[in-house]
Image (tube, rainbow, N blue to C red; front, side, top):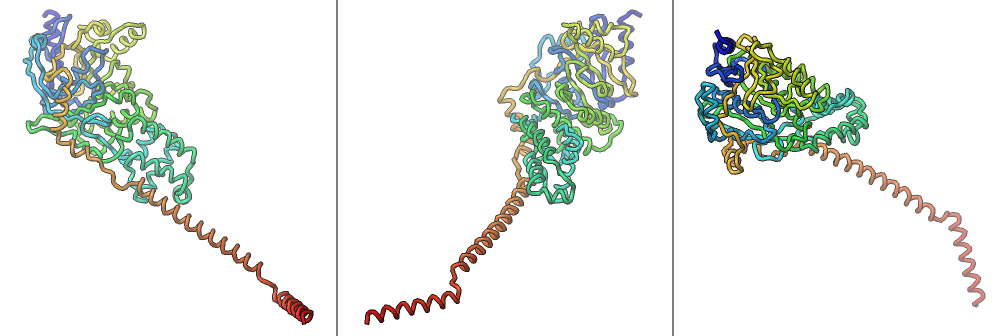
Length: 505
């Protein structure tokens, strides 16, 4: 048996599955694509999460696109974080190309151009189905971690939430939260202090500054109503294909705090509302987080801990998380250790630091008799990648340098007119893009403060009136003539008059 036959046997045996699967491509040996040596990923293991990594221009986004397409065909919905704005082409079929035909002939798969059901979402000012969440839905713990608050400040946030619950004050948007904080240190200080304890003005000032940071990054658009129902992420079209939800994020690349805020709230909401699924035949939803380093960039220890906990726990709900980034080192080790499927595109070594990073990345993959991993990592072409998955028993599959299949949909963005058509035909657009501004903590407290001020003004006017009355009474008393003096004065006046009359006579 020669080397290529041995490789073919290893791949076909190592990637054999009993249940349903998706095909990523065909294995390569000594730089040659081995036809029909299919690299398969069992649907059963897709909730074990994954990583798609590689240098810029090596094909990460197309791999993401291929996976979303194949999941859709299997009736599995997906959510794609579109940071660069190049995933909308899923809504239109591929134009085809001779190189695509050549690639698929080498792999041993027929190529079919197809479009897929797409929903365009947004958390910013871009067009699309508006995703929102209320402050109440975050809860005091998650909100405190996102804001990176101290223990004392987190305690104040918990008091604020408790006060609002007890007094039926809905916390919907950031204006509500700010209003309650200001009320707690001014008009409502005595009321809250008597019931819940002392609240430091310095601490509330620090919390307000953190709120302003999120507000400036566009949090005012994200917090509010109508809240997005995460069940709308797991829909299928009339043909049974899973709907691909694309979250447009091209205008928040420089707003990592808003991005991480959204992601954590979404994952927490999914974990809280989705039923336990265990090890079923396929996932309920697969989430692809492109430019994943933005989540971990400048994240506090508390925030990282929250992410790690969710990654570990959410797979029991049938949710698969895939982090897409340039280097595996962008993902914390505790998260990286939870990722079952790894698709590693080429890495480029321009500096000594790059070479060290490549050696470190190579250690994340199983040892193979067919590859010198750290060397091949720098030589792979566009659309080629090392793949290591988990089989249906949870055992790592053989490492395979893979010629990846091409996307069936357009490998380019939609035109403005095509984007408008997708949004116009959306079944969710009119459900979530209606602005709702019902009475909440801001309005209720504003009215309460006005009544307090009005009462204080009435009491102040009453005191002023009493003071004025007392002063007037005192002046009236001082001008009244003493009765004895009045008698004396009257007698003197009469004698004077008589004297004058005598002289006249």
